[in-house]
Picture 1 (spheres, rainbow, N blue to C red):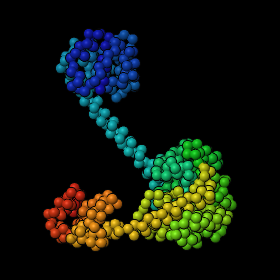
Picture 2 (cartoon, rainbow, N blue to C red):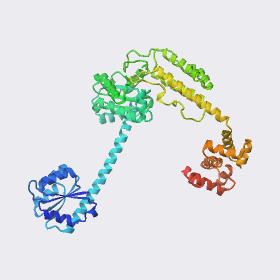
Picture 3 (tube, rainbow, N blue to C red):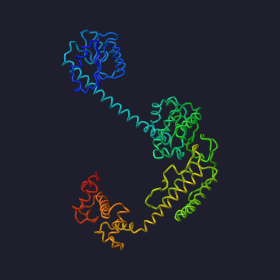
Picture 4 (cartoon, rainbow, N blue to C red):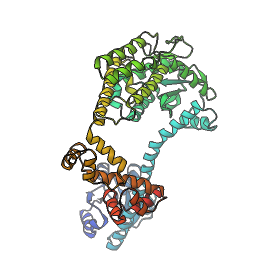
Length: 535
């Protein structure tokens, strides 16, 4: 905390400085000024929390200084120290926010009392300001999410919130809007350059893109870009002003997005519809337009409802027709055969007159099914392919066009990775040490010993102990304890069995020893664990 002493008499400034134990009030800096003019410069530069000022001074006097402080530093606490018991001075002090009016010669007790009140008042105000700032931060964080939810419901579920249109009109200044247009900015799939930067943080990407769109839209009266709560729909723009400039604004957005993200995007636009009654109709038009966009097109990037579709009706080519070729190649593990199977699929896609948004969504679903069937619960390994939920299955270039060659290469690598996982899995299944691990998983409740386990597989105790440690990085006894305790957790969580019964069910005949091992591995006793899960 800083204090400023303003007085044209140096001995008065020295007296105030010497009369106060400043550290007691958490005051770190005591500043001085000889008149109001120099005080103004110090206040602007140092922002002191407490200001002592005389009334009669050269250049700028105390009355003018108090008036200036009220405007320029209103949060500061002001104390007047004057040699004049003048009503006009006292009235001016009160009028412009002064807390105390002390007369010279200065009384130490009065000075300390006034300073204490000022410091306490400033701390109280600062706490209130901090609380308000925190509230503002929280509001600024949650308000965009609230508008996303409200606008998503308005365009997708008419009638779900009857008061939403009035609330939005009041918040964004749309009361005078009679018409609007709904625009969808397609963010699935994503261009490769964008996916590389934001693939793991789509929320940040949508936040950035939404800000860019709103920057171009301009005033909130002209519309608002929001993230739809259904991730399938990406970003949606509700435009309420300058509708004749829609294409120009969308082009400007794409130029801005290209500058920031290195890629352009496709927009699907509705016709002009009434606001707010026609908002849902406009959104349905937007969806219909989006479904007709072909990702094989170089241009245009802006599509309007009612225009001839870039994707003429055609029977859908399905991945399922090529799944058996790919499956056979993957199980054989031959890279060349996998490449040919994937190439056959990509060639079939290339013969299509168009590849639509709906096609890509359906193929992603088919890819997920095929991948799941191939892996059949096998443990993931390093280098496994892109998950089926990833938007990275379909590579787009910087202009939003589907790259068939890149797609062929990536899917060939992905299915080759699956082939490697299956190969490794088969090796593991034939490996005795994995069989031992599986044996422990099945018989952990028995009174297992290293000798018994080794004898079951006709191996020496030493070999089993050493090899198990090499492969799984833990001793057999440690693994057995972990398996038993993991199963004990499940039994304890159910609440149907006594703790002593649970101990026996997982292979411990001594309940106290079971509790000791349980505490060692979990940091909690069995009883504490049960209470925690029940809570």
